[in-house]
Length: 370
Length: 62
Image (cartoon, rainbow over all chains, first blue to last red; front, top):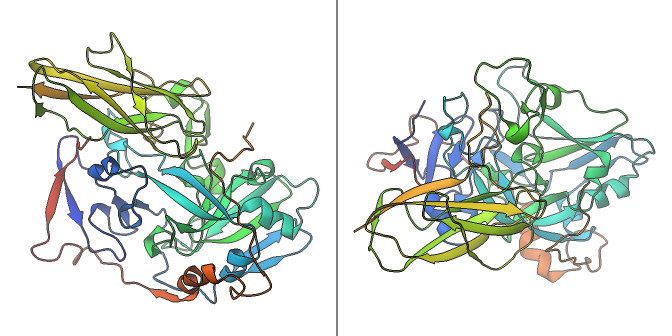
């Protein structure tokens, strides 16, 4: 298990991908090097993080033969070709952050098991595709249906591994925002980023963004499959937090994202000119709501100054922020916090749970004025 | 309660949507890219770092 302050290996050996931080080879877990986030709000496809749950992922897909099947509690079963998705449905584009629920797990103290991500298990893309609602309406959802279950082409190594399936309440699935994407940032998805289709669930953690989506099933009853009722659970407490070793904590499925803000143009312990203006810049996102503001402190959190926000690509997108500060001589602790339009503010204390999920503590960084 | 308004949404009603992508010339490059056979090779743990390519980053990079 890596540890905070250690070193991590970079690789460019994965197809259609640039230099990435390697966490795991099978299945591929590749983290975006953090400097990428300072280049702009959209994460390049070749450096978008990669995270699979099951180890067997297809390495060849015939786009012409691929079908997206819709079945279950519908009036008409569908078997849709990619060209039908492209031309027979209204097309939508949406900027949205995709973030692993275990992003930043490496910083949990005490440590927890799982992929030891730093802050790069997230990315923002302009997704192109069709509304899930339009597909469901084409099939005709039967009255009284409860959920829409989705799964893709990845499989487990052993037969006993439960098929990875996630479900959304039928009203959520039909909200007009959830979409089936066939392109990101104007290009087809790279193979390890789920070619040819993936589900986009704006504002929700990536566990719901089903990869290589091939199957849509409308359920008459709520879904009780393993990946909905046993896995990806968090404490049903403020900030999804509990004490290590605590028992009897009510648990709930992971769902909505919460706001985060991070400094991107500086690094910890970086030397900067003392008593001269310094540009501090970063990215933020509001989770499942738009950003209300971003504030920066240079005095340990006693006072906070509003940052200037960059272009707004929509409430689910990264947004850049910037502020000018004048560091004193010696160490200065910089802190940044975001709040969203639902009134959720990043907490001052880091949360803890055994899954290493939903970290969004106020980030801090020390620069040294010299 | 889910929000129903897309803050950044453009809707392009497909033109001439009968079959394939011939009715919308702008779709042709993307349709061609989607309709191809994509075949990749994933590296295994033995060749994920070719000789001379190893490089590291500090873990705490933000």
